[in-house]
Structures are given as C-alpha cells and as structure tokens.
Image (cartoon, rainbow over all chains, first blue to last red; front, side, top):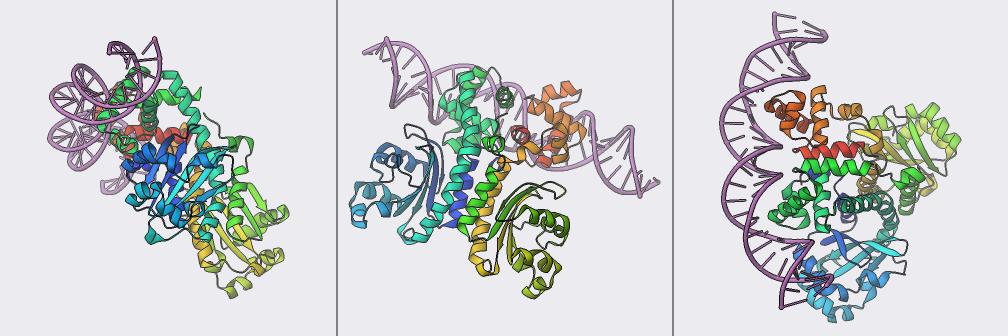
Length: 236
Length: 236
DNA sequence: GCTTCCATCATCCAAAAGGATGAGAGGCCA
DNA sequence: TGGCCTCTCATCCTTTTGGATGATGGAAGC
C-alpha cells in the first residue's frame, strides 16, 4: 500500500507477513491475526477481508460462544483447530454462533492456528472460508500444522520480545495510555496520521487528539521529536 | 538496543528452525542453511546430515562450479532455484561438479532457497536429495516458493539489522552524499527543517532540496519514515 | 449521584512539510 | 572543454501537521 507498509519497524508487519503466508498456501475468503493478552483481549489485530465492525461485533457478542475460543484450548497442545472437527455439521448449523455471527458474514469453515508462550496462548491466526471454498482438507490442515512451529518460534523470539519490551518501558516512562501508546508505536514506525487512523480504525481527528496528549506528556511538539526521544530512551 | 534472544543466546537457532520447517514439509536427505556476506563467504553454517568436511571441500574446490552458486542469481528475483531446472539431466551428469562433488556425496537433486536484502543475497537454504528420493516436484517447488517470503522477512529482522550500524554504512546503504547525511542525522534527532537550516547554516530551501533527494534515495516520502528506516537499520 | 479518566470525533486556523521545477557556482574527470 | 555531480537557493502550490477548543459516551471510583 504505502511506503510505510514495507518498513521493518511497522508493529504489525509480522502479522501481515504471516497472513500473506497462509493466504498463499491455502485459499481463504477472510483471515485475521491477533495477539491476545492474559484476559484474552485482542491486541494488534490485523484483518484480511473482514470489516472492523465485524471484529467489534465478535468481541462484544460472540466471542464467548466461539467454539474455537482460545480459552478452550489453553492447557492443550492443539496447534490448529478446525471448527468442523469440533462440531458436527448439524450441531454447527443449529448453533446461535453460526446463525447469528458466521452465516451473516458468509463464513462457513473456520480454522484457527494457536501460538503459545509456555502454556498461554498469545496469538491466534484465524482462517475463514465461505461454503464455496469448501472445508479445510486433511492435507491442508496437516500443512498448517507443520507450519505452526516455525511461526510460533518466530513470533516468540523475533517479534514479541521487542514489541512488548518497547511498549512497556515507553508507556511507563511517559505515563501514556494504551491508545496513546498504539499511536506512538506507529509514529515511531514512520506512519502518517492518515495511516495511523486506518490502521487503528480511528478518525483522523482522534489520532490528532491522542497525538496532542502524547506531545504534552513527552514534552515535545512534533512527531519526529517523539520518535527521536522514544528511540533514544530505549537505547539506554 | 533490544537484543534479540535468538541471535544472542543461540546464534544458529533461526537457521535450525528453518531447516526443521523445510524438512517437515518436503523429504530431504541432507540440508544446510548458511549466511553469506558480500564476498559470498559462508558464515554461520548449519548443516543437516552433511559432513563438515564436505562443506569445506565445497568451499575450496567446487563453489565456483556450482550451477546454483548464489552469485549467479544476484540481480534476479529467483526465490528457489532447482538444479534440474538449470541443467538437463545429461548436462548435469556429465559435469565435473556432479561427478566429483555431488555423486560422491550421493546428492542427485538440489534446490536452493535464496534470501535477499535489497538485491544482495544474504543467505541460502540448500536442500539435497539422493536419487532414491526423486526430483523436486513442481508442487514442492511451488510450496517452497510460497514459504520463502516469510522466511526472508523473519531472517531480515533477526540477522541483518546488526550489519548496518555506523553512519558510514547508512550512507553507503542508500548512496547518500555527505550533506544529505548531515541532514538525515538531524532528522533522526527529531529536528525541524528550520532548525536543520540554522544548524547547518543553510536556507530552508536547501534543506528541503536535500531532503527530497534523501526521500528518493531511501524510497519514502516523509521525514518520520526516514527516521524509522534508518533507526531500524541501525538497531541491533 | 458525582467526578475523573479514557477514548472518540468535530471544526477552524496557522504552521510546517512535501512536490515540482529551475537555476547558478564549483569541483572533478575524461 | 564538456559532462556530471554536489551544494546551494528560489518560487509556487498542495498536503499534512499541529494547536485550540468543545463535545459525547463509557468505565472506574468515591
């Protein structure tokens, strides 16, 4: 999309690359890659062909009903879960989750790839198909299960440590709120306000408001200064 | 700043994980993952079922003859090269490279996956098969080619950042002139154009001209993106 | 209930940055 | 000498940022 998208520092680059990978390997109508914290809250959501409104609706109303809810898989060592393996077709089609959430979105088949740190699930890659695309075949699921270890390794060792360490220390140092920190992360990655707005699903006005608060807290008056100061603080 | 656990604690972990991945996905009799520097010297070699002596023999005597020598693929965008695509069977079997190197090691089929930073090849994952395992099929090669972008991305975020540390390397990396580099340095420090102008005793117009050239060379369109990219290249 | 944060969005205005283009002076080199 | 590069500066115009201010809904806490 823009030059920013290719920046190595972009916080969601890893997720986008991961989605590219699975989309190249198995046909999908929609997909998403989200990080979860200990409360199973979604963070850093990256979606392919899914409306942000659908994501919000899921979080608000349907997450608890999700047969692939990651909370159901903590303690197991499941790498890839497929909804067709969890429920029979008749069970699924009769469920409120299917009728009220999946069907309106034209999702028929779902497979989730789980990523763990220790026993905790720290990220989920969701793969969705319309009925036209057909069910996930055994060989596709086998492929995905072979893929999972490397993705999990890369996620744990190259991506999350940096991201989390940076986020925590910067947030504490300047007393930033969660949302302000989201904005700062993208500022440091070199994103424009417009890109930040679309990345975080905010209006431009909201981005600017957050940014003004950041300027106040950090004690500067330009985005580049924020970038310089934040990155400087991280080196010490 | 942030040290990446992989490169710090287990320098070859990334390569081992990568080899595990491809060995899980396609049957191989031997495999290797090596990093190369600008002179095509091997570094950080990790081998599966290959004698270190064979590697030394390759470097000493056969590298120059290798039809998959990465030097032959700089400037291309080949992701995965297969020896059977480069040479006909009769050509291969007649070659000194085959008779004196591959055959004694019982290698019959070879595919190499190349990893680049910009145009330079920075790493190669070599996959080897005995004749009993058969040639790499089109679908296997297709799978490997789909895998390559993600591996390349992950490799670049792990390994390469440390290669471009100093001011000099940033200048070389993007072909910046001295004056342009002066400007970049102040950009990264968070300075406004006005401040840069007064710091360097230039007019605002000159600063903007330099900056436009920098944008072109680095391939971005905003100062914050320059900052992000330069600092990203320097981070360890 | 009331207050205080947070997150969201809006409008209006001013300042800064970015894009396109031209151009002159000096150095270097074949 | 002519060509090429670097560094310098200019003008004109568009887009983006930053600053000020106000407003709403929700969550948390007293």
